[in-house]
Amino acid sequence: MRHVFVAGSINMDVVATAERHPKVGETVAGEAVLYFPGGKGANQAVASAKLGIPTTLIGRLGMDAFGKELRAFLAAQGVDLTSVKTTNGTHSGTAIITIANADNTIVVVPGANGLVDARDVKAPSLMKGDVAVSQFEIPLPAITAFFRRARAVGATTILNPAPAKQADKALLELVDILVLNETELGYLTGTELRDSDDPSRFAQAARTLGQGKIVCVTLGKRGVLALVENQPLLVPGREVKAIDTTGAGDCFVGALASQLAIGKPLGDALAYANAAASICVQRMGAAPSMPTADEVAAVLSTRRPGQGRDP
Ligand code: RIB
Image 1 (tube, rainbow, N blue to C red):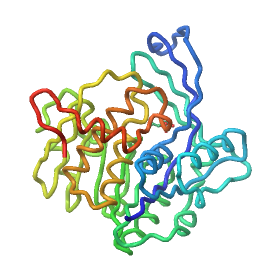
Image 2: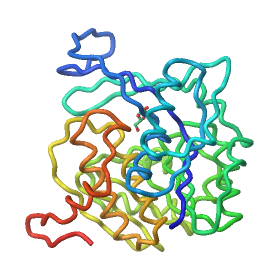
Image 3: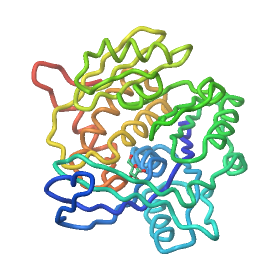
Image 4: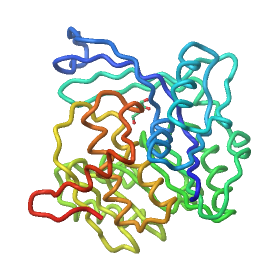
């Protein structure tokens, strides 16, 4: 079995639930304040580790109470933390999240995540066949250095360019598999896209990013559209009643990485990741909502209306 390495953010998610989101300039009464471990990097690493794959997280925490709590939580999920540094003089990453009607708004304050650098990603020993994963909540030069190392040893690189920002060509050229939602796709391609658009519009936009890489566009409950050598592959999603979608995209990425690390073909790995994400959205919180392999297997063994079982 190969190893998954995730270079990315670790946050404490401070969540306020409310009946509806406030408009700009408006105050609404909330219902509860909840604290959940999160951060795109940590969420993806937890997803992979809970599915039984050896997983190393590369990142930084502040020297504060949140940092201690996050480290203890991640260790308990089986994530290897030997490459997570505790950094003086800054706070742990913090996300302020509002949830209403299962939808969220998020403001992320990077703190220690903003100090991850190219030296941090040099320590862990990647090998051929491993999977290297990153997102855009740590500085882009660190991601470039990480993927350069991964490429040099023959590991597969997965980039989840979230939250969306412009990346230079040098970084994008180091990516084997790009996983993004319609907002990120629209941003990176300068196209106006809506989640209700026909998949052919996403395929058209994704083609402009293709150039030798696989592009996977996550479409929520509609599933995922993958472009492999420019050929579209639509893997349907699962209709479930979502209560909190925070971290669902991260669950998808971590689960996909875990399955590719054990050599599953892309189509099967995508169906597996869809099933994992469908479990995640039915629970509150980001990292604590990641499913186990038994839970995903149970979902995959259930027949969907009009369809057979998933692989
Ligand atoms: O993708 C969800 C994550 O985004 C949250 O856990 C929050 O920390 C932000 O990083």
